[in-house]
Image (cartoon, rainbow, N blue to C red; front, top):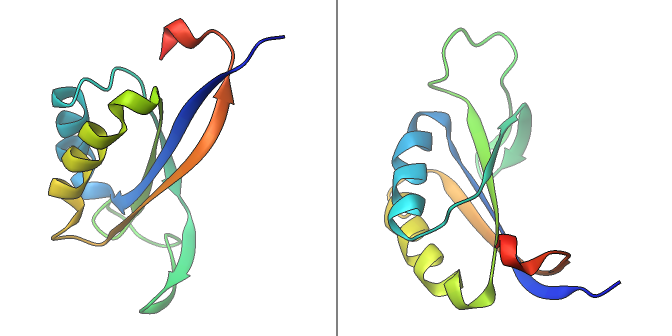
Length: 103
C-alpha cells in the first residue's frame, strides 16, 4: 500500500486556551485536528493531576494535527502565537499517511 509523507504536530496547552488555539489553527488553514484531555503529568513545576479539579482552569489538553509538510510553517506560526505566553509545548514528528488527499 502506498503511503505519503506528512507531519504530526502535537500541541499541549492549558484547557482554557483551547478555543484560542483552534481558532488560530483554522486561520492557518488547518482543517482537521483532534483534541484529547490530559489527565496529568510532570513538568518543570513538578507532577500535577487533573484529579479533584472542578473546572477546566487547571487542566491541559492536547491538540493533534496531521498536515501536509507544506502547511507546517504556517501551522507552527499560528500555534506559537498562542503558546508563547502560556504553559504549553509543541512537538513535530514525521509520519506516513494513506489517502494523502485528506490532508
